[in-house]
Length: 71
Image 1 (cartoon, helix red, strand yellow):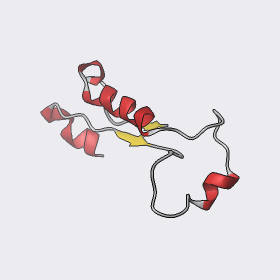
Image 2: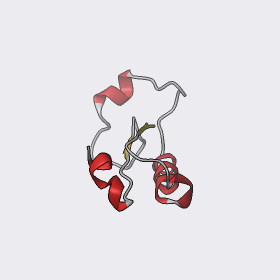
Image 3: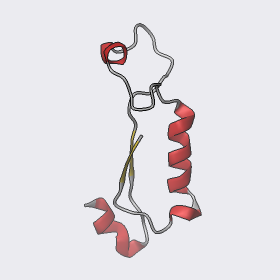
Image 4: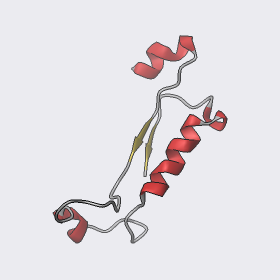
């Protein structure tokens, strides 16, 4: 809805939906990290997500709007 509302102003709106990401945590990792596997067989990294965000923020994505990118 936001992408639709802001398109006339030339503003793009997108979403990055990260999956299981390996990050530093205080305490134990969530239980589902021990019992679930990803398709690639590894947890993602913050750098994996940063690359998607960098793409969306850059000029290559100027025509991309209203999308959810799942990682």
